[in-house]
Image 1 (tube, rainbow over the protein chains, first blue to last red):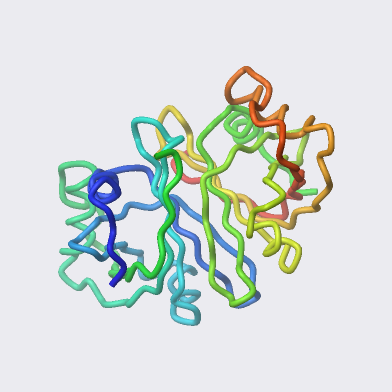
Image 2 (tube, each protein chain N blue to C red; image 1 turned 45 degrees about the vertical axis):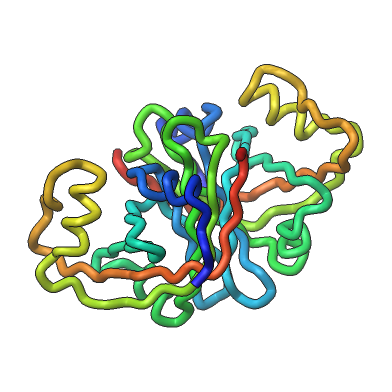
Length: 128
Length: 128
């Protein structure tokens, strides 16, 4: 597992703005803003089961996640690595993310969700 | 050229936080925070000539750009399309971006820069 310095862990531990990039089967990239959660060296993401992104991730599990420092986005960190997908039948995954960002459980309860656990292979920090 | 609605143009016209995604030759994505500039239907980006990203773009010019609304990042837009690279010998490209974000010309004058002009093939807006 890639060792992450404490100051980067501190940045990753906050509910910061983040953008996730995946690659489509045609080799073009797709990016979208996302919630993420640092969990002891891994990153938890969560997707609606109907997202095209989920299909892309099954074909190519490699993602890149850029986290912006919410206080000053000139400080940012990008992480690369593969995700492992798992169902989130009781919505506990999306609820963890929702509570982290909003303080509340996720409001929409009638859609299937999928956890995507990211292993961090590489990271790069900008802006000290 | 893809028609962009006025409210999205308004969002894209501001110096908002943004993240650019490219694809490496091994098929994995890379994302990084970036300055961008809306210029009458195209997007101007600018890279240091030494960036690995530049090499990736020569091999695969397709990018995705996610722009966050600086006032509330729950509103965001993602754009996809190819870039065309051109030298920026007088640094006028990076100066345009720097003035847009900081009000000042780009401070570092001793590094070669490259403009990347993005054609917008597709876009998607979240958060109204």
